[in-house]
Every structure is written in C-alpha cells, then in structure tokens.
Length: 83
Image (cartoon, rainbow, N blue to C red):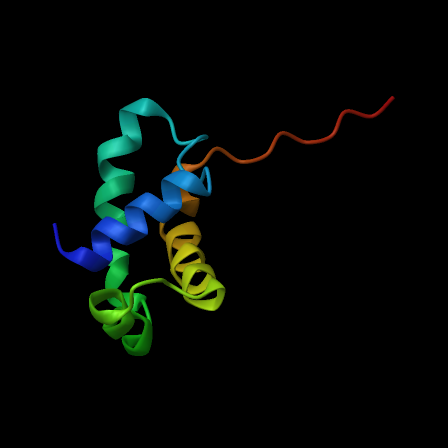
C-alpha cells in the first residue's frame, strides 16, 4: 500500500471515521479510501514522503478526504424522535 494510503488509513482510524461502517462493508470502505488518496493535495502528498511531522493543516486535509470517501459507507443518522 502506498505511503499516502497508509497515512490516510491511520488518520481515518484515529479520527474514528470507520467506527460506524458496518463490518460487511469494511473492505469496500478501505478500498474507497485508498482510491481517494488521489484527491489529497499534491503539496500534502509531497510532505508525506519528506516531512518528519505533518502539520495540523495537512492532517485536516487528509482526514477531510477520508471522511468524504467513507461517508457513503456510514449509516444515515436516525431521525430525532418527537416527544
């Protein structure tokens, strides 16, 4: 797995993005995230290979890509119950 995909996966896991993905859809969700790493800005990808530490902005950019990629695998929020 390429470095950007590895880092995106680790950041998605620590941001708990996969927590609500049903287990039977997990492989597809990981594949979608791996495919979405192409959407990580080029500057961020360059720093993944060279920087000793990612900036908060770099992490946020990667997590945003991950959230977008995984969104279709998460169940819709339940509607609020009226009292």
